[in-house]
Each structure stands twice: as C-alpha cells, then as structure tokens.
Image 1 (cartoon, rainbow, N blue to C red):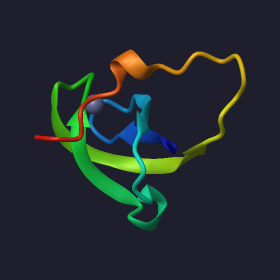
Image 2 (image 1 turned 45 degrees about the vertical axis):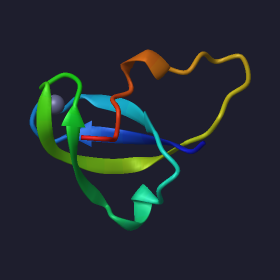
Image 3 (image 1 turned 180 degrees about the horizontal axis):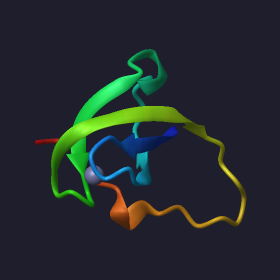
Image 4 (image 1 turned 30 degrees about the vertical axis):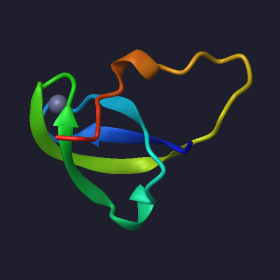
Length: 66
Ligand SMILES: [Zn+2]
C-alpha cells in the first residue's frame, strides 16, 4: 500500500496516510486530521518510500471511511 505524507493546513502537522489512491493527482484533500480531530484541508506533500526495518506509524492513521 502506498503511504502519503500529508500536512494539515489548520494545525500544520505532518502525518502519514496509507491509502492506495493517487493522492498526488489531487494535490489537496479534505480529510480527517488526527490532531485537530476534525476534517480539514491537507496538502499532499508526497509519497513516502518504504524503508526496511522502519516501523510504520500505522496506529495513528485514521480510517478513510466516514
Ligand atoms: Zn490538523
């Protein structure tokens, strides 16, 4: 699964969202921010390359379904 680095435009925090969508084609998405705890606009900063042995921050990834 592809992981994307998103930046919340409200709190400015960056976090990783693992989804198979091509978010880079959208540029900006409206999504739930785990820090703001509400839906905000996010800038898609880019794809995160998989690194072996690097634990993914999977627990903090919010569910896409609403
Ligand atoms: Zn936020």
